[in-house]
Image 1: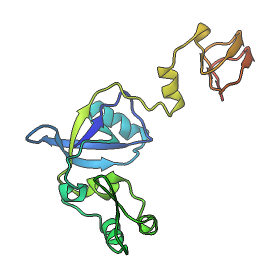
Image 2 (image 1 turned 60 degrees about the vertical axis):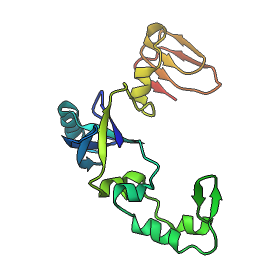
Image 3 (image 1 turned 135 degrees about the horizontal axis):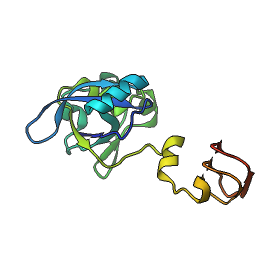
Image 4 (image 1 turned 90 degrees about the vertical axis):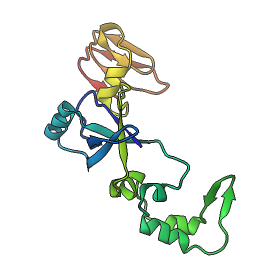
Length: 182
C-alpha cells in the first residue's frame, strides 16, 4: 500500500495518484499516476481529492515483484546474470557491484508500482509540506520581528517579510523588503 499525501496546496514538482474504487481491507485502487502536472491541472486535482505521490509505502515481507504481480525484467534479468555467489547480510541478498550498476536506475513506483493493478493507495493527511521549496520554508519556519524568516544570525534594520538563509554566518540587511536572500 502506498500512502498518498492529502495536499494542502497545488504543487507542480510532484506526481499525483488518482484513486478509484475502495478495496476490501482498506485503501483505494489506483486509477492513474500523473507525473508533475501543470499548475491548472494540479489545482483541479487538489480540489477533487487527488493525492500527491511521495513514495511512502507499506510492504509485506514477500518480495516486492512477486507481491505486486510484476517483475521488472531489466532489473531481475541483470541480477540473475550475475556470476558467483551472492553476498547475504542477515536476510538481505546483495548483488555484486558490477551487476547492480548495470541495472536500470528506475524508481520503485516507475519500475513496479505503476505497472501493476495490485497497487493500493491510502490517503495520509499529516499536514505534509515539501520543505525543500522556499515557499514551504516560508510557511513552516518561525516568523520573527517584522515578519522576517531566517536560519542563522540576522541583523535587520527597516526590513520586512524577508526569507534569509545562511549557514554559520551573520548577515546584516538594511531596508530590504519581500526578498529571498541565500
